[in-house]
Image 1 (cartoon, rainbow, N blue to C red):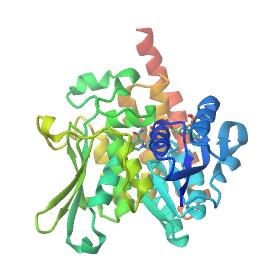
Image 2: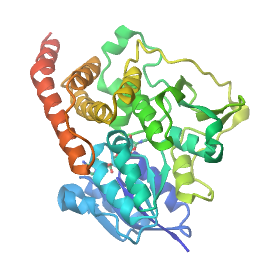
Image 3: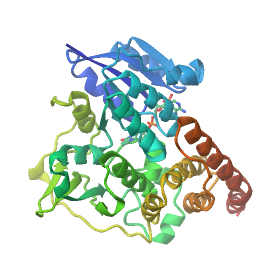
Length: 377
Ligand code: NDP
């Protein structure tokens, strides 16, 4: 029996890697739905390549069509939309598929409790695709949960790992998206440069593995070979290693609970010069601290962090604010979290909308004018 797969965000970086893995094993998979937002040609190309039964282009077919994109003919949905826009389609996919493989971390950060509750309600398996969480998933033995001391997420350090604070302050969008190890979409690339990506991943790990913040650590590992680790009470540290190629965690999720060959790169350990680990510099990369503060404060702080970051990153990529302004914007938003209880998707979207509106005004009135002055000089 072929596994029936749907891909939300099929035209993106993760979506295309997923298409590579599926196309490499035509006897193992058939594809039900593929979606994109506005890139119609790329959507048609991926649909043709994978012989998909349905396509949804949300900018043409509407938000509701995207939300309902995954039909009950799906065994496994790959959630690879970028940002909180993926939340409703993900919730619908949890209802309609037996398993969801999640790359789209923002819904987990902003609405983790709702996503997990839906998975329990519909008995749907959640499989992490994000390379760090996929690594943890592979070495986290639930039967030995009481003996797990901590999760150690690794971080490449991004393109500014060795830059001084002064250099980072002047970083341009082109420099921020030039990741040394991974080829990713623009938003996550900027997040990697600010280390906000790792901050989101700390919250994501808390949600996925039910681990308190004090049992989640981050280590800089520039080679991106060890994708993350779990330390047990007896001192054993189990790590998952692999090339910096998202096709490996995607293949893991697609084949779960089995394994499959991938068209991806393989790691040649004998050719490696060494593996380095170092503690992150919280002064040059203050975003990381925010993750722990938000986990301390609760779900609304996590939602606010995510929404403010999404708006700020878009403004940075559009040349409206500077790189350090991203953090200023997030700190501004965290100073005035909406007072709403996050118990439904509607309330999550309402709170998300409030944060976005406040942050957009802040950027327009407080930050963009000074940016114009910088450009004029
Ligand atoms: P991309 O920007 O490359 O792709 C995003 C996909 O989502 C595209 O198919 C895009 O369609 C679609 N999309 C964008 N906005 C909307 C919207 N408003 N409504 C519906 N669909 C939309 O992103 P990535 O593939 O890099 O990342 C996807 C997710 O996976 C993110 O949450 C990211 O954090 C996570 N992730 C990514 C990794 C990577 O290596 N890239 C690694 C780990 C996690 P269109 O092409 O039409 O715009």
